[in-house]
Length: 377
Image 1: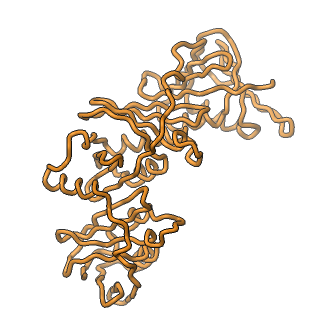
Image 2: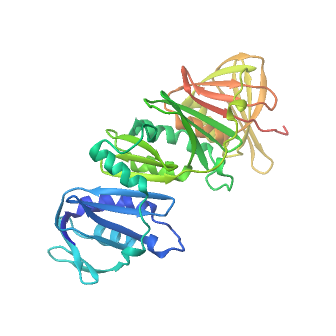
Image 3: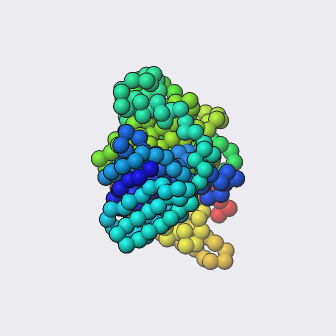
């Protein structure tokens, strides 16, 4: 194996590929990253068995093809500390050499035969992208513009519990048919429903790990990118030009979330996002729990802590309904306000301990269901 490549392009590729290297693992070979040449192109591949990333490295000249496994973090650190310019790399004996005009590294290689085989789906997708054949219709799901996908993830992951042992709390439900993808997320105290328009040819639902969605949103961030999703052997693949990411799906049942979304309300308030966000942020200085008192002449926000003191502020709003007070976790409302860009917010309110709903004005594709808090004051 011998090749020449751009240091900057290789750094960018390794930044992506090393994202899935495990922090801790009982399988040492998974700390490795695979460099492999195929069809006069160089690919980096890494996996933690649950997730995997393959990245095509641009601006590569291959002299001799080959495949090698290197310590992923060491290799990445070496490359990013090299000066800009062309790099010569290759296998010499039992070592992997990295050369610039003035720098030389000799890295130990890992046993390539011990590295787990890549999923069959990855090979099939490569064949499909090259030949436009080899996949069944239901395996090709749909495509989304990268900014649309990133926004959908950002507007849903905050309502999950990624570290909870219950699978449906640490994942997000994907439901889709021929024209709609729905993302549903919950941590029991709140629920997000986000709808996206798609063009698909199948109908299905499954749970995607929150960690994987965050990784995808971080990887596929270019405004001009379009992400194509595939489902093969219960693994979800996300593909753009030069990058392929896959994750294993969660095998669990998601609750019947439709029953949680209220159909009627006791009041409706229309508020400006920024003043409400600023006021609730100030209330957090006293306590997370706030009492919201709605009346025709405005909204009063009140927080109290026996040791710290009290907070009280009136926020302008347009309110329809009987006056009443209700408790919420202020941080939960702030999470929603930070996730949206539009200024006019509609708060559909339920009295007692029933769920309320936050939405953006004239936007029914994003619904935030929030359970109240029981306050003692």
